[in-house]
Image 1 (cartoon, rainbow over the protein chains, first blue to last red):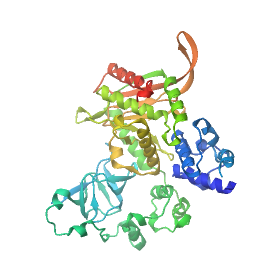
Image 2: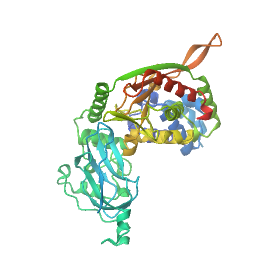
Image 3: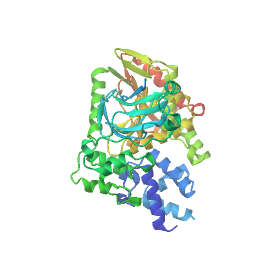
Image 4: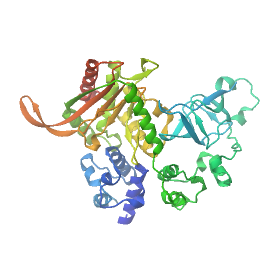
Length: 81
Length: 390
């Protein structure tokens, strides 16, 4: 999966969890929390979705590495096949 | 005689609702708990469940119509009635019937497409993202009349905004509903407030260990521990989980803890995790997750909104230390939680870093006094500090 494809998948999952967020307006370098109040419930749902859709289990202690789209790509890219 | 299915009140502050769509047509077999209609209220679009088993005889209120609470929405031949010979053969009764012809509503006048979209079976529902559906409601745009430009022709937020260039104030109805409920509360309920700051390190440590050991789908949030602790405390100490109506308090036989959910566009709803005290933590967490997701997608069920017997409002994510919570009538108590924070704490005569939380209680002085309230808070804390037994 290339970076564009991965970014698209991540945004799909984020907007599935937060249906009131428009994927086109997400700014890659800014934390989801600061952009649209992504909270601990959203983060947990995101971790579950990553496991379900990409087969990646992110430990709770590493949630901070999923905080923005850029951080997600950096963390997830080496982990997806 | 058919039974009447009426518009339920989804809280003390709701007087009316607008039928957005029906999921059933005459002839459809329904059972108690089935979602049969979507109703627009001050709290957003709500899935309304039917409270009887039977077969839909007639849809009385057409989509697009605003009606008061208590209005007959549909007539239902209930099970008792259908065992006696009825003019309608059973095979026909259980088969999906063709949609009824609709009288054009004012909004739909001259729009053939609208009728088609509204009367289509659920599988053929309008392709529209939840965000766009909400935007359409906010802007009073008839989404069914739009052409979608999104994936598989879905209507996007942009499509809706193009259709209505001048934006309207968002969620005005919800703001009014919150104002009405809170004004009633402050006017009628003599609140007393208590707070206690607790070292919750045993709970957070237990939680971290639990979450490290289980699959991601079984991880818990701290709030789930709080919800369960409140439910168990309600069972032990009467006076906090119930309703004050017509001058008297009635304890609820079941404990349904509502959770205040902040919506991203502003506003607040507090749907219930039903039968909270009976649910194991992982099942409770599943319900909690589903509830928050649906609250934010505007897909709550009527029963969830009407059910809470007490509410937890947790503002930890907003980085405040404490909440002074306001009761939502006709309830008589609300528990507030601030953020879990690292603080210097004295343990065995030494100052050590611990994780602490300030829990608060807003309760109704017509029902309980501060002494009982203090006991109630203490029970919650005792449960919370024994997370292994929750």
